[in-house]
Amino acid sequence: MNTPLIKAIIILPGTVLVYVPALIVWLTRKTAFAASFPPASATTWLVGLLFAAAGLILMFWTMRLFAVEGGGGTPAPWEPIKNFIVLGPYRYVRNPMLIGVNLFLIAEAILLQSTPIFMWMVVFVVINTFYFALSEEPQLEQRFGEDYANYRRNVRRWIPRLTPYTFDDDE
Image 1 (cartoon, helix red, strand yellow):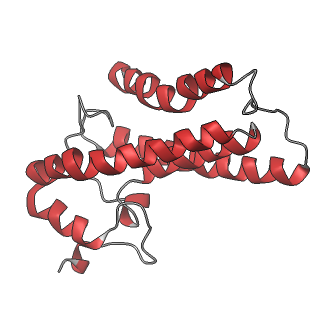
Image 2 (image 1 turned 135 degrees about the vertical axis):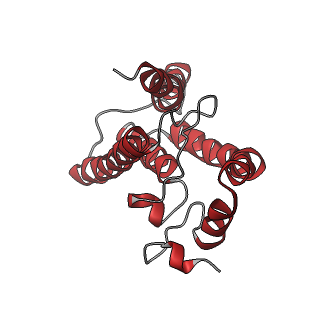
Image 3 (image 1 turned 60 degrees about the vertical axis):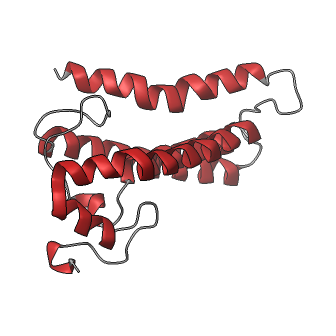
């Protein structure tokens, strides 16, 4: 049992996907912004479930890569993995785990018909964009050197490449 990984999951995605949305639903329950469940149409259900499925697939895929290929550590910044991973979705985009989280937040907003949860997702993206640019990416470059610098030049943060990145792509 990987206790540090479980702790990281409970704290990070737990806060973003469960605790904050639950607080938003509770705080807006008697307002014009109150969540409404279940969605009125089958189309809304289907779209919400598709976003949820895509988000879960990306989150589980990336967590598995971290657990199997990471060489110890967790996705949490206080206990980072030891190995530089450029496999699976990381060959297309630098932050597939966070894209999965964002897709799941969109699903929550759709299924709960909640504009405040969608706004929380937007705030979360903005916070992470600044965090990655100012803190995480410089730390990754310091830890993994030129391999990460080349990767960063060739793979975008949020928008996937059309072709998988290989080290042959290095500029």
